[in-house]
Length: 383
Image (cartoon, rainbow, N blue to C red; front, side, top):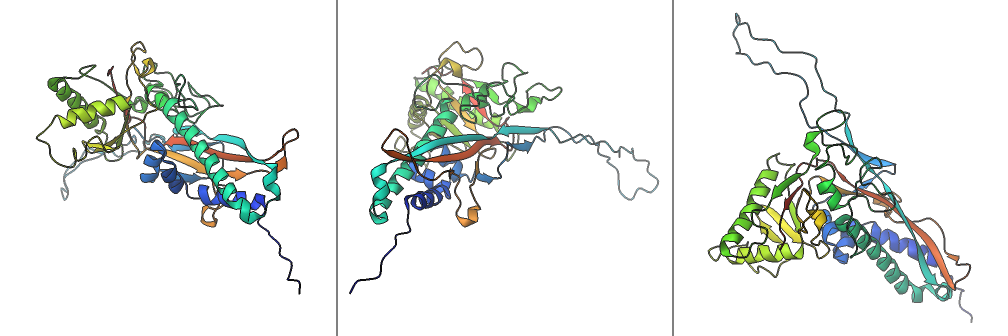
């Protein structure tokens, strides 16, 4: 007796959609699996946010005084004549840091032979292809953030986050570390997130990142390594002076700076605690209350000579992950499983190739929601 006919409703379209929603509905888990340095730091700090679709993300800038003077007086002094400073002054807080959202799109290509396979045979390949596409996307975004270009090599670039900024490029990433650390540092009228660093008009002197100078450009001896550690201690302490939220939480350096820091700490034979346990085998170096990470994609370059751009120097950066955040626009309600990467077309055949494609798109930006002045760089190491 013939059995009931079966229908496989798991088409290639639905399989890809399900895979996208599974992987991109939980970006923290995706970056954990992908091993991305900066994105993992953001995920661990809870700094990946779902935001509404729009032209830009904006955050109020609340530096400065509110405009109202305080009045101080002795209580229960019925005959006293306290100076009355109470008034109606209030400075505006409408100045906002602006960050333009970026749209990114690409084709998801599959061989046309996969279209006719039973779903049970195709689903493993579809999941692997989807995950690889997403990992490639995240790798490209990390390159843009670290280097200002979408590859592991090539000339680095300053990228600013708002369409009216110095260094904005509509066809590249949201912002780069070089842009974050340098735009407006030497030229006060240059804008970063639509704010310049001059204390007039639409500017704010508190919008500038910090810049500290290394004592010795290439520390090698024990005495020079002492100065090297002292530069780190001093810079972290000075950059922390703005308070609890506005302080560096992480360091990010080139591989060479990381190696020299390990050497300096190993030289301190009297230190025998968590700072030097397995030192050199860990990717993160805890020091002075922050975790210092390294990236093989940060390289020695004249662009890291922020002051003059003449001497090739290594990046040694202090980041505030209380302020830096990654904003993702989700394709649906996050609670309903919608991911941040959307399919905007069903699979269709390429007109001249034996392949099918579906168009993918996502929208994102980096932003700073607790200021820029708590980011810093130690300049001068030519190791």
